[in-house]
Image (cartoon, rainbow, N blue to C red; front, top):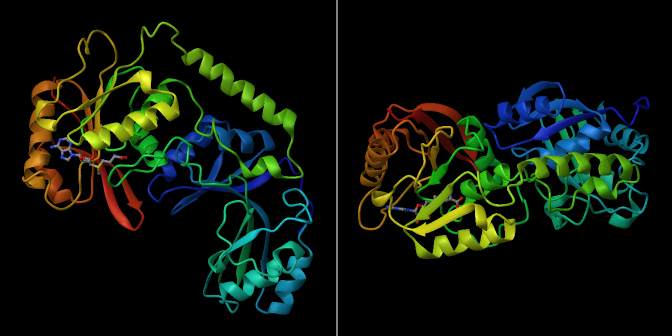
Length: 390
Ligand SMILES: C[S@@+](CC[C@H](N)C(=O)[O-])C[C@H]1O[C@@H](n2cnc3c(N)ncnc32)[C@H](O)[C@@H]1O
């Protein structure tokens, strides 16, 4: 590979399958031009500054990989030659002990472990063992992703570290928590305006409400976490500081010192343990003062007092349970109650319901449209969105 300017990084922004269009929008908002979208990722060329900004600000991404090399090989001898020619110096010091995540498809060199060993041999500190599956999954080790398809190998270095949806606040979980990146995608694709009220009547550990409050407070997604790129030999502290200054300006613009004009975000759940977990998470995220938590069943749901007084229309956004019996009733009743309460008490509001079963979702009876079709850990999920009659 010819040397390229390190200010021009060919990247793959990895995301939960179904959020590619949202990720592409976030990249456009950062001034980048996404090139191609595949399942679970968006290709884009990023300057160093945009790479830093994408890691700091993107809410829907899982990680950002920077391509180090690309080649076609069919023998281990050729693979070793190509590995020896890779210039790792922008990303990994010679004493690094990276872990290698290798996947292959339709390739002569199909054995991931054997491919990883050849890569690990380039880094003495790995002791020649670098395959992630073999006990090197520790995020303290820099991650290198190797993908071989039809003998064509792409080698990428991870710039993010722990997955970007791990914002750092989640410790307490209720049942089936959503990823923070997915909650962000739901809010964006429902067109939620961060100055409008938001209600999640089945909030669980509070992910949707907390993500909304962070958005309203102008807190960047990666505000409180370590990024792998900070440890790169090519890391530019001055560039990072200038991206950080942008973030500080945004936060200042969103600040509401006396609390007036704060959007009302209400998170309720029938389970007291879930509300306790959600409140503890919101405190860690620094947004507990922006969310009103209550233990309550969906049936008694009300809009926040005063909502509808001139502010943009609010959003009911929720992720009901997907299976089993709940509280003695069945899921059909729960979905029907949600639809009835929303239609009666939230005129003119938007509504978004994340479901696994579209037949069950018909119980909501509101004529919702599918806005996102997601793959959440191998399970298909549909984000159905609509507007309640005024
Ligand atoms: C799939 S979980 C929500 C997970 C949440 N989005 C998160 O990220 O943690 C569904 C929640 O609905 C709550 N729930 C079930 N039936 C309810 C009802 N009738 N009223 C209110 N909440 C209910 C459960 O207690 C559970 O916390």
